[in-house]
Image 1 (cartoon, rainbow, N blue to C red):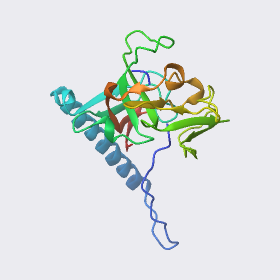
Image 2 (spheres, helix red, strand yellow):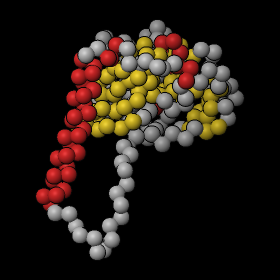
Image 3 (cartoon, one colour):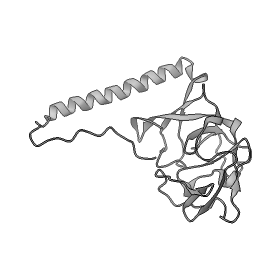
Image 4 (tube, rainbow, N blue to C red):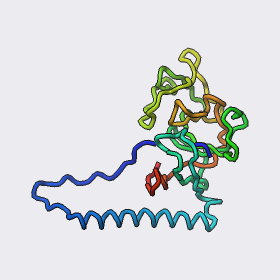
Length: 211
């Protein structure tokens, strides 16, 4: 599968001057418990996948490319919702896994038949770009997860691209290094395998984050 906003952690309560500091031993114990909890969830997910739940409900995918950086790095694992899911319920900003479109003849990698990108525009919406900014139905998208220049433009403001019925316009977060709808057009909604719901593995270690 071809396919990294910073993680959101729960804010710690502010310490008062009179609050006792935790000892190094206490901190190490907390760290060990956190790592153990992360590994427990990863193992549980792995067992469910191995038991066949992946076929109907969820499926884990490995990320082999950097087209979604920094949200998804090379080697990351994501959990994708397949059951109780309809592409009609997708929203702008959702991350989806889909079958490689037949029109993709420029960026084909042998063995990679599924791609992962972010939904930028829905059926019937019109989009264009100005500089590094993307506009959908005349409104500038707020995309804090994009850190790279746009690279290939979407469409000129004078001639915006309208997404056909039943299709989705998708792009990688690593805009300057991503083969996406700018290269091969929008994708069929029916080609969507599922929506990414959980980051399982990031930068070489468990990093559980919901999308």
